[in-house]
Length: 394
Image (tube, rainbow, N blue to C red; front, side, top):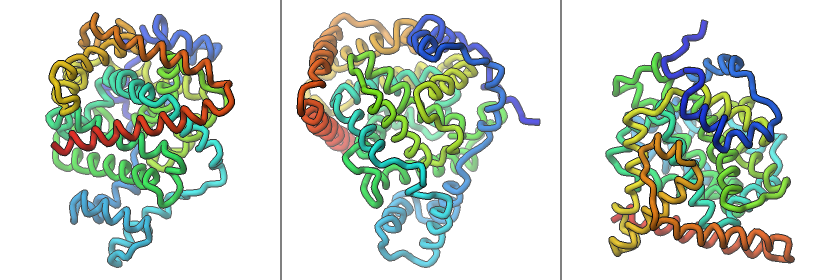
């Protein structure tokens, strides 16, 4: 009989509000029914399921040479550069579990999904930061590995830099072709997860009976939904109106990325309706946030102040206010209050970008305009990636 961990609870107050009075109400209307919450119990075993092949790489190699050297070996293997017999054997065994070009993969859909991610430019990154990432802190359980690995002490800027690097690299043109950098970043991120899990279990007082296994399959699915469904909802809130082809492409993109990250293929949603149902089951069985929730949200809120860009403190303070406005606009007052995020007046300047985004979206039917926005959006995102990389080195 599967253990039911402390973290598993029906009808969390915060997320119940999301589905009854927040954006989730619209999603359920779109779905056409309210999923049967008792079905969620069948997902409890996923809290004790994890990426064993990835962990084996960490145990056999990364733990001996350190993460940086281990990651360099991974990249060398993908590039078919020479490795020691032991290193090659470790990765040979790992890649036996991965079909990098499965029968179900549609490269055209990957391209369209990545194009949708690029064409909103800065708006995509705003949605990721102020909606997907900040909103994810509302669950206490999924964030516990961050606390145990010291992410809070390292600062929000570092995690934001890593997230931007990962996301921008994998949505570039042909990024997921082997051996391109996006493909490498997905596998490197998988190693990060395994390295964290192995060390949390070996070196801390982590309670799996309370939280499940760190970075388990159920929580990895939730992260995947954050980049697919939640991202899509955020884009719509900002005025982006994706086509059906773009939506199908986005879910296919994250099906493939999720598969490469080690998420069981059978639980990754194929389309928006499946994703809505999966998000309902995950969110509605989460406990309310705790002091770590507020601490992580506060750190992300104050990240612009501690960053090195812009150089003027006043401008960094203004950026914080603008992000706070987006938090309220995207997450809603109830969630922001749960996260301990203040309201803002100055930050209302953000409406200019929302207005601009909606105005541009009306031109998507013009010949060549979508292609133009994809190119410009990619340039904006790459510039932000480089800025984060630069100030994270300071």
